[in-house]
Image 1 (cartoon, rainbow, N blue to C red):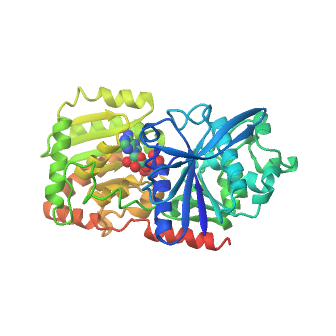
Image 2 (cartoon, rainbow, N blue to C red; image 1 turned 90 degrees about the horizontal axis):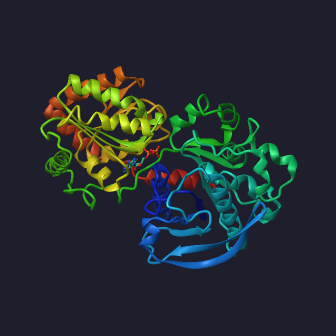
Image 3 (cartoon, helix red, strand yellow; image 1 turned 90 degrees about the vertical axis):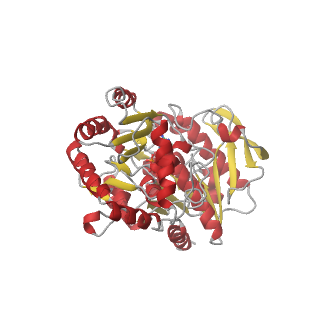
Length: 467
Ligand code: ADP
């Protein structure tokens, strides 16, 4: 079996969020299980592409509407990723220092056309084309319906929805940019009078997966307009929980953290990481340390964080550290609290992979007041490093965190409001004070197996059902 994953992100090449972590790990685990699994993604202008060398394996021209672009398919030299990597280099469109921006329609359309043109000339065709999110959502439509790709029409496609909020909408005025197809099929591209790549993929892919079982269920009632479509297509939909890459996310070997640790040395290891964080951000290491890592957007409940932090800092003697970027408003609000709560609160606005690892290794609690969380990887990283997650009971958070009052190991709240999160913080402080149990819980959560092993097998079973 030969699987090609098509994605806009893949760790460590280009990462914006969890999509990268999944696409950088799943193929590796699939290869270990005896399936040949590779990744094709855009060639961006970033740190990874600047600091590695690549070989040009294929060059051709692609047609995007009236415009012709030259493109190349590159492979990574000295590849130690654990899977074959192919990069689509369309210099005018894809070679940018960002992954997503205002010009995504043309960029990702060109990317998808290049991917299919390249597959078309491969001697050994893939057994399955596995697409991730809306940036690759027109592939399941084009393979059976665009005349150019007639030879690919019998290759099964799988779509994984990592986030249904973003759907890649564009106007019918641009339909001519999609390689020619029988126009009576245009309805497959449409949702609410606009071209909707995610909807097209849900209609056309042979199987659709979401990144957790609970998210699959939730999408039937809240999918940013696609609820009825997902209910209608539910027979081919399945939720498969993401795993984590336990080679990258391993406190025993993690090069990013200040002191590595094992189950036996978890207390001293975490203490050293917490001390570093507190020294660096002017916080008191004796107090329980609450952290947030993530995109500062409404989905993550980030708009409520300033109020949550203010109320918690006024009521309790705790430290809070935030790492994130996103909405300007939220960023400014979070920054403005720093002067008011010197010594108790700090915000690092930006993206910093190393710092995120140290926070997982040193904070006592990780806050995730998400309104939408298709799977969520942060809580699984936190668990692996011995940090207690405090989560809203939704999506993948519901599938991975059990409250301490239900024989579990984390703190759950039932809604996203300032009151309920502050209450959850209060419960966390009580738990922290119960030192013996708190330390016992740390060891226990660090041993929970969230590796990809089980889920990678589930994907393979799904592929097998299609061939
Ligand atoms: P999403 O993909 O919705 O953003 P996930 O929980 O699936 O959320 O994945 C988030 C990933 O991005 C995690 O690896 C997390 O550590 C990382 N991350 C998010 N924001 C930052 C940041 N500001 N700095 C470093 N890593 C971040």
